[in-house]
Image (cartoon, rainbow over all chains, first blue to last red; front, side, top):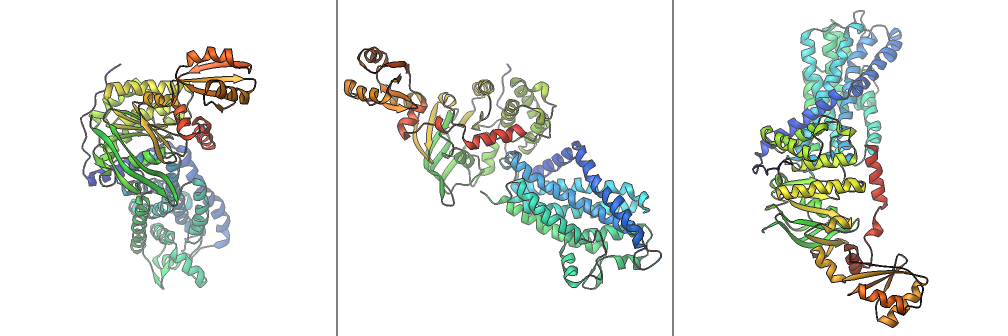
Length: 286
Length: 323
């Protein structure tokens, strides 16, 4: 048997370096696990496909063109960006669940005693979840030709940061909840009472204008609303829908129509707020 | 040998529950130190404080020369931990788990790769390094965790019930590796266990019960405190036997688990006398040296063994079986 040398004593790197190393390592781990778990990729595609192909296709003939103009999109084209957003929503929340699993399966302990700050674990996890969820959303762009939506390269380049921002914000919501959670059972409960309302209020399935006041207020509180609005504006614009029609289908805030940049700013601000909150929750010692 | 772990006046409360109640101890460099006690005695809480996972309520704790509260990352860099429950990413391969560990501990690949190979060969997992951990048995996972915990060349290795839920053969194997590693690297071992035979191997043992250290010494000296020999008698009528032992020999026997237990100085000399003078028919007689369980019994009036395979253990083993 060979002799195991005691390696020379390693000095811990500076706090910033340690944090960056931690973030990168966790991000990479999430990507590796995503790539390896093909059933998750396929499963993550199945649900949006069902929504589009059955729900959307079934409802579409009854709706005609939307936005009050013959040049407006049909319901399927309207729904498509919403379903991309839905896919990001589910996938992001799922990635946050994995923290609770890490806790239950013990791997989290390995990270908690490692010489990396706890907030780096949270940020790495959020970035990993955001990246995989963004990829999951981008995969749905392959369906564009079947929906009758033409996408330009510029559109896709624009969608990448938008999907990422939405995913980041949603992962952070999931992490805030997961931070103090001890079992996956409780998580399922919260998710059912969180994910479904987030989806139904988000404008993924119907335009958010001309709604009763109480519903208007609730939809504007839902962060997914702004993420999906940005995606929809970009996709419909790329599909050649005129701007007035897009504005009619898009979200207004206090009576003013939004635009993708403003949407993105709202999502980003919320994401940053939530990630700080999640990191603080996580860093609280036992 | 200088002390590498110094614990003074450590108290840990969870709300109204005091898990660790004013304990003091030091562990020397290179020592094999054991924490022995029943489940819920405060072993895991103590180890969590030493590993910077839990903050002490009061008291001062220094590990590897650093304060666990103020200099926790220096402590973390210098310790390795094997938790009670597996803490591997089962969806990654063995090698990927090690790579991840090396990365977060900031070990350059030129230094960890050869070390990982050496350690993996030693615990006979080298051939399986590219298999997903999901496919590993409980013993293999433990061996991989040993490799991982030593990758950053820690000064102290913490082992929290490292063989819980493993079969006796695997337990023996794990200990063979640990003993060999200790011989080669001189790493300080801090063990918590409720297996007596594991505690026997320690240089020194702290016996902990209800959050307090009730004895701390080398196993041999702890046992010497109890008695030289222990005789176990199984008789027709234990109560009468106890009566006679008291009257004829002036002994203080106890009935434990349906046998009469006598602590004496020279058991070998007493047995022939017992056979001659007791009127109660004797079914069997056995003589043994005191074990740590006897020490625990003498100190607390209870046995550690009583609490083995508690509900928690069973649950834990079931959870493990699922992964």
